Length: 101
Image (cartoon, rainbow, N blue to C red; front, side, top):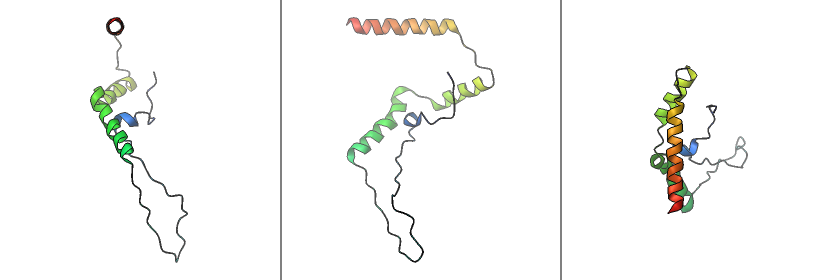
């Protein structure tokens, strides 16, 4: 898995504030400048609140991710295949138990 500088985690970090752009051209010299008002619907506000809560509910730890990213880039990150295998088996057992209920 490659870790890059893409902004694919914006929804997890809470950096999802919408930006408004005006389709109007820039005002010409000598003309007055009008102001546009933007309002968000209640649905939009609910979506933003849910997206902000994703990182808290999922236990996402940005500092831990950054530390792992740094360790990988420095070649200090070690992988323990036994631990990965044990957790994968435990996760599979949990999923199977949920399906059998």
